[in-house]
Image (tube, rainbow, N blue to C red):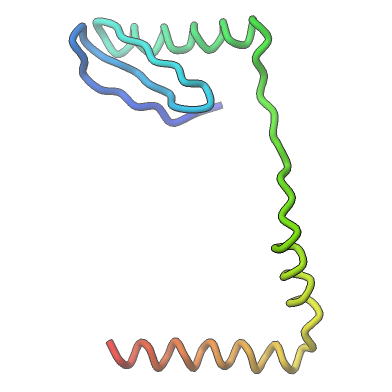
Length: 95
């Protein structure tokens, strides 16, 4: 797994930060040492019981809106799409 990290100079050399949800920050004389320490901190978190998971958040309003769109007859949907295209064309011609 690759995650984005932030690498920057600091007083003792290099600071590596992962940001959330890991919130690992290491400082060392060299980049390779700081990265090695960040990996070690990650492994320690896993060994202590931390784990990756996900949380499903339901959005009833979004689901209902999608269901409303799904129930539009094809002919009306095409008219709606054409109106959007017409509006975009008019907006572009004003620029």
